[in-house]
Length: 220
Image 1 (tube, rainbow, N blue to C red):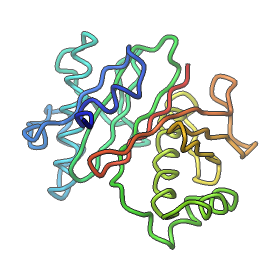
Image 2 (image 1 turned 120 degrees about the vertical axis):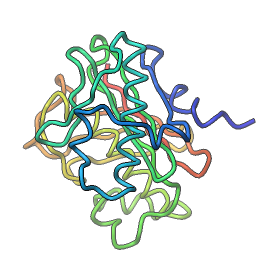
Image 3 (image 1 turned 90 degrees about the vertical axis):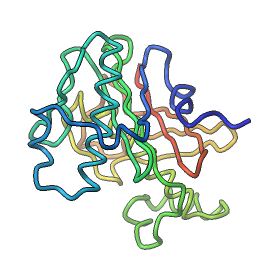
Image 4 (image 1 turned 180 degrees about the vertical axis):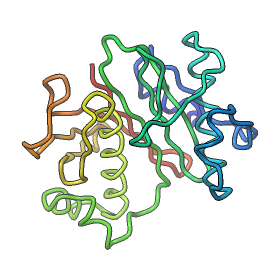
């Protein structure tokens, strides 16, 4: 029996990370008044995704003792989590989830969900390094595996940016997939970007279910 969609991230993340997956009604949930200004004038699709992400985040934060916490946006467009809390939000057009934990042994983590459809051919050289592209040619359906590399890099970035406040281009990270164990390793291959807590390698895992690719990176 396939795991429930709401359980997939929970199986990939450490136990201390709280995960909430959006239910259908959460996509139209009322935003906190201080959150509304960030999507004022936005199209309906953007408002729904934003609302679902904030609804998931509020419920996850409540499990850590932060009741009805308004999740604001800082200048770089990243969420402003409570002090001492790490968080990550992801969504597709039909799936949304948020995950949080207290900062401690976990120094960073990121989650990402993507529709399990091939990455457009013209996007592959933008997302993948030459080494990655060459390795994917040995797989069936390289466009779909390129989409997994895209998702892995998104999770790596979400685990990396809150601590370093440094943007990463796709080619700043090179990902190697271990298809036998559903794991991957991403290495910072740009010497010009800082390490995260002395680390330049990021270890993650992935799953595919319900036509969604799920990736997770945790830095402990």
